Length: 558
Image (cartoon, rainbow, N blue to C red; front, side):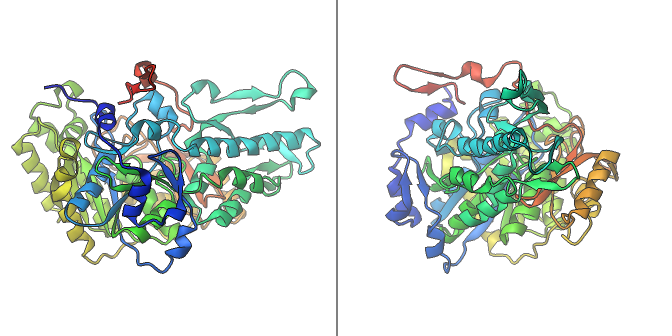
């Protein structure tokens, strides 16, 4: 039997006109701004009309610590929303937009997989509606205005050695991590060291995700600290009079993008990934709009629960006043065996011993959701044909010991029908009361907040704040930023800051090497380990297999 690729499945499934999908969601035609037949932006004015409508239930889909074996978080998110429709519930999906860097570097298909996808898959993975380009343009406009200000006399006294604002590009390109610009004479600017981030790591991305409306967006942009003056005074985008023009570039990008699943469930795909720097969730505007339109909103956060879910709760929910109703933790037998030390080539073979060794990774994520955040949870096992009853039974027993049910998810092969079991459990959990709380209080010191995340969520034994980070911490506290939440930048491949430590390490030392404030977004980024904001392409980039034929049909985008 030939197994079709994700893109082949997506291309062979008929789509409905996006106007029809919008009507299904209850969106009046006057708020629908068409981008062709199958994509639309929804004017944020709809929130004013819906402000008195009751919110639906908010369901977060997160996952175990990522592995090369894959977990299927987005696939499960889409399939669950379709499954909720199958049992008669009005549901919507709220997802993040893919970034071109990972698409061309690692893989495409950042829109789900199999028969649980959002479509048009090629558009979503590539140019889509231009949001990423608008973010990059706004980011680089600010960079240009910084250097122009210095060139034109530097009335603000900006110290070129203390500029913290970086240029960005939506591509993984290690050549741009460190650059020197302004060379070859006075007419070309003032020479200085500079660097590029990938667009999704830009503070502009975080601001777009967290802004309540256009005015809030503009205010946040004005608060961006671009660097410091010679007398160590913070200089903002507002000081450079850049906020208005940046907001003008972003006014359409702020509007949520409406698409559909393969089963025509309405889906917002809006805002950025990168749960290390930007916060890794879809936009607040998209989530809030979906909650007003649907009875059940299924959303996700980047990477594993220690990164994406933690930021979803402690940053997004806190800043936006959201309260989750249930959490789905996605795992695969294959990934858990990888955490238990099994070789990638052997993950399709029954291995109870490796599974037992890897299970603590899942169980710790479960304990964090139920014990730290006090939210009801279900474990969704994204089933593979090679999974045995003995392996599945072991996972179910261990989860039940923690008071959490397990639901088999077969959405990759069956679409919404394969998510019915999971959907029923999610509905049950949403009807339960919960005592949601955050991991830390904003009144705690910066150091206390970092330690709370490190010890409660990661299970670190201690936190080592290096001298450079400690110096920055004192500076941020003095400047009045001590009450902001923390955005931890840590490898996604381990609970620790060492990517090689699989499973559920504990008692380790977490090293914080630097701190920086994203004052417009409203959080402090704590950089741990060797985390990077500009990745490089792998030895064999996914781009090598992507092609387009004379008719415009794209292939190789998995």
